Length: 152
Image (cartoon, rainbow, N blue to C red; front, side, top):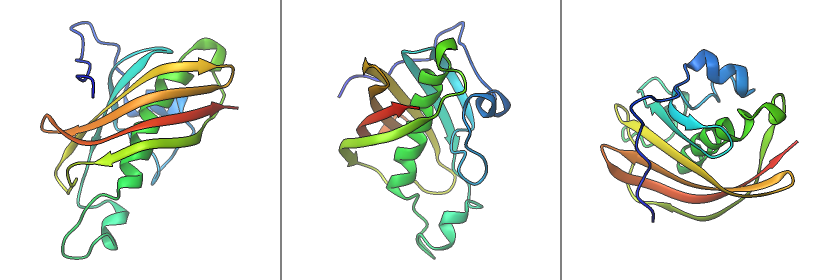
């Protein structure tokens, strides 16, 4: 697993409103609160503040809330989609899942955690691309995966 990229001193950051202008996701499925830094078409670092008020905690699991791993993967995919869709030639397109490889969940994510989401776009052939993604809580790796996406 590669070391995560760090936020640059002169970071390209995006607010939730900026993200909403790039991605079509809306509540309750907008899972990235902020982009801390990114390079269009190459990589992005996002943040997701996990709160007790998240709807999925009602059933996952009562009395012991844990963020579902599939939603961590979705947050990572949305982070990568910001990198892919921020290129001018991809404006207005959708980034859809094409596949998930080697997903590993290493740490439970619970209310109060702040997920730092890293996705680097490592390959693209036509509309199909691959992102290497990792999520961290307090500097500890919570999840990793290789995400395949298709731009439509």
